[in-house]
Image (cartoon, rainbow, N blue to C red):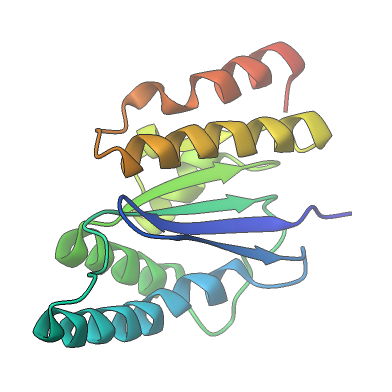
Length: 166
């Protein structure tokens, strides 16, 4: 039975949005929504800038958590999603984290254009999922505090997998 997948979009000065999907929903569809979301957010940001109001945060952290069972989109290829992610990283400075169970997370993240130091394997059970929430919360707090997310962001998850296996 597949576990729910989570995607977080948050900024250093703004709200955090959590996307949740069941195991049957294609992860790639969520990633495809990045372009639409960005178009809407940045359009609103430009309008707010002209009016002197609150702006979109300077830093966005997009977190992908998957059990590896839903990456089967027929609409968006890995290459298309890779280009979409690269655009968000290059043009808007988004950061991406990839947490994967039952897969080689670093290899799968690379297919999307996410660096190995931003990917981690996790134990897909209640404890592993709770740990993911803790680590993700720390990562979001780090980014919200306008600090650099170090390579050690995933050390607790790595230690859990080392101790309990995948």
